[in-house]
Length: 231
Image (cartoon, rainbow, N blue to C red; front, top):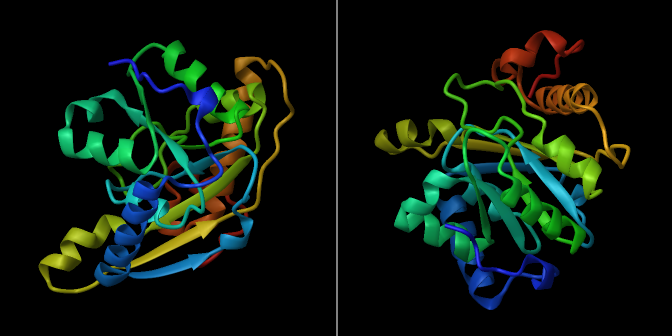
């Protein structure tokens, strides 16, 4: 299903009244159901475009991150979620979902993403492209680097961990500890780049995310972190 939203004329400077109300509700629920520790909120730009590049461990990643964003964001989501009524409504209500077809590059989705960034918006996406089933980082894809260089727009690396244990904790009537970290903006050289160069930028971004995570969450990038940083 193709989105009918005109991404060039969306107000990205603030949440809509409905979105602000939903955000407050989500913030309350997150704080009630989990012990949340946040670092780096000062790194989130209040104006201008950027790509929020986050690791992906759980379906709770989106509401946790959403509760901290100061203005409207657009979520890059797998197209399967548009067929799930509750999730489809939630993604559309709290931001605007650009649904991405799996397989070959989805040029329609890429055009929409570029429009969001060139119009001053926030684009939230996971470089890994899918949820990790291992509990650690999996191989990153070049989509973030491609959009960042072509828009152009900076990348805000961010990680969240602990939310993947939420169901296990709730079953035992415990509140999980969720850690959220926002890093500093990453600027990539604008313009057209070869796939080899985009892959290099992607690997650099993934190592940045790995350094923001405890060793047990670094996955396939564990060996590339020269000096492990304990959480």
